[in-house]
Amino acid sequence: MNDDDARNLIRSVIGEVAPEADLDSVGPDEMLQEALDLDSIDFLNFVTGLHERTGLEIPEREYPELATLEGCVRYLTASLR
Amino acid sequence: MPSLGADMDAGTVGTWLVGPGDVVQRGAIVAVVETEKSTIEVEIFEAGVIEELLVPAGDRVPVGTVLAHVGVPGGAAGDLAVPPSALRQTPRPSGPVDTGGDRIPAASGAGMVVSPVVRHLAERLGVDVHSLDGSGPGGTITRADVEGAAIRPVSPAVVAVGEPGPVAGGLGRPSPAPTHRGHPSATGVRSSPLARRMASELGVDIGVVDGSGPGGAVVEGDVRRAAPVEAQLAPRDRAPVTSGRVQGAPAGGAGSDDRQAAMRKAIGAMMARSKREIPHYYLSATIDMSRAVTWLEAVNTERPVTARLVASALLVKATARAVASVPEVNGFMVGDTFEPSTDVHVGVAVSLRTGGVIAPALHHADQLSLDELMAALRDLVNRARKGILRSSEMSDPTITVTNLGDLGVDSVFGVIYPPQVALVGFGRVAPRPWAADGMVGVRASVTATLSGDHRASDGHRGGRFLATIDHLLQRPEDL
Image (cartoon, rainbow over the protein chains, first blue to last red):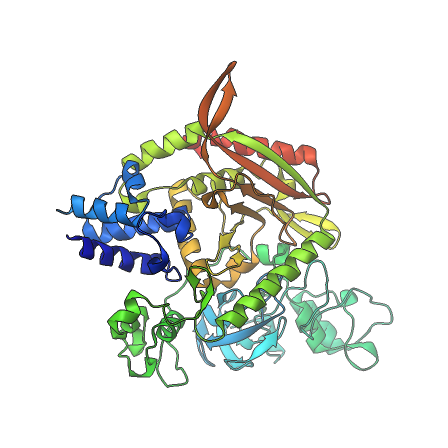
C-alpha cells in the first residue's frame, strides 16, 4: 500500500464514521480525534473500519501511532508493505 | 404524536411504515417522526391491526395528536365499536401547557356529567372518570375524554408512547426492531428512511435506484452503489459550511440550518425549564481509575478490534449499578412527587458534531453484561449521530450520564433533563498526581459529578451514590 492508497482508505473510513467531518481541513500532524471531534467510540469505529478493510489487528497499545493523519498513513504503509 | 423528550412540542410524520390492514406486533416500528433533534422510529406497544392513519406523511402536528387507530383483536374497545386509540401520549408528569388538544387537564370531578355509555367505556379502559374534566357541552365527559385518559397500560387496547414517566417506563422492554418495511414514497419507490436520507445527501434520485431490499425496497447499500464516486468520498462537501470544520447536519438535506436553529431553541427551552423547576445540587468526587484502566488494557489486548471495550462502558455500567444503593436518583418527578423507577434506563448524552446533544436511553443498563452494554452503547451512539433513534429510547431514560471526557474537560456539572432527577457527569480519564499511603504517585483518575434534584434526594445520599460508583469501579472485573 502506498501513501495515496492509505490516504484514500483513511478518508473513506472517516467518511463512514463521521460523515459530517471534513478531513480536508485537518493538517497532516494535527490530532485527528481533536480536529474531527471524535469521541472514544468514534475512534474505536475508525480503528474497526481500518481493521475491516485491511485485516490488521491494530492492538490498543498502537493506537497512539494513529493519532494524526500522517501517523495513520505511516502506520498503514508500514504494516501493509 | 408521542412526546419524544421534554423539549418536544410537535413533530412531523416523515414516513408511515404501515398502512390500514397491516398487522403489527408489539415493538414494531410503525412510523418515522422527524423532530428538531433527530429522526425517531416510533414503536408500537401493542399488537393489533392498523385501521386508519389519521395524519398523512409530511404533516407537522402537536404532541398528543392521535396519529392512527389500531384495532386490537378481541380488545375491549372492539366490543364498543370505538376505534381503539393508538399512539397516544402520556400526560406530562409535571403538567405544563399541553399542545395536544385532547389532553386531560388537572383533576376536578366536581359537577361531573357522564353518560352511562361513557362510564362503561371508562370502566373497560380502566379510567377513573372522577379524574377527568369533561370537554363536552356543559362539562360532559365524552368518549374522547375517556379514550384520551386511557393511556395507562391497564387497557390492552391502548398504545402509549410518551414522555419519560413512570407510565412510559412501565411499558416494558421494546422488542428488537423488526426489519424495516419498505414503503411507497412520493415517487412510488419503496425505500427505507436511511436510504432516502442518504440519497438526499449524495444527490441520488431514489426513483432510479434498483432496490435490493424486501419487496424491491431501496436500502442504504443500493443508494451507496448508485451514488457518484466523488459523492461517496466527500458526501458533505456540497452542504453549506455551518460551523468550523463540521459540515451539514446529521439530518442532512434541505433546511439543516433551520433544523439546527430549532434544535438549539428546543434545548434552550428544556434547559431553561430544568433550571426554573429543578432545585439542583452539585457534588463531585475524584475516582481512582488505575485498576479499571489496567483491567481494560489487559482485556482489550486479548480481543479483536470489534470486541474491545472503552472506559465509557465501565462508567455507564458502574452508574447503572450504583442506582441500586441510592434509588432516589433514578426515576421521575411527577408533579411534586418523586416516583422512583424500578428499571434503570441510562440516558447517554451524545454530542452531535453539528452542534446539539441528544440523550437516548440504554435500556436496562444495570442488567447488561459489559459486552452487551458496550455493543448497545456503540449502536446507540452510532444511531444518534446518524439521527435514527427509537421512540422508547427518547422517552425512557431514568437517569442520564454525560461523558465529556473525550473532549478533554476535567469535569462536567450538567443540567438535569426533566422530569429526571439526576445527571452524572464524567470528565477525562487521565493520569494525574494521586496521594496514597503517604506518597504521591501518578494514577489514572476521573472526576465524577452528580447534579441532583433536591426534591428527590439530598447531598448526603448523592454523595453515597458517587461513593458507590467509585467502589464499583475498583472492581472492574465484577462490573
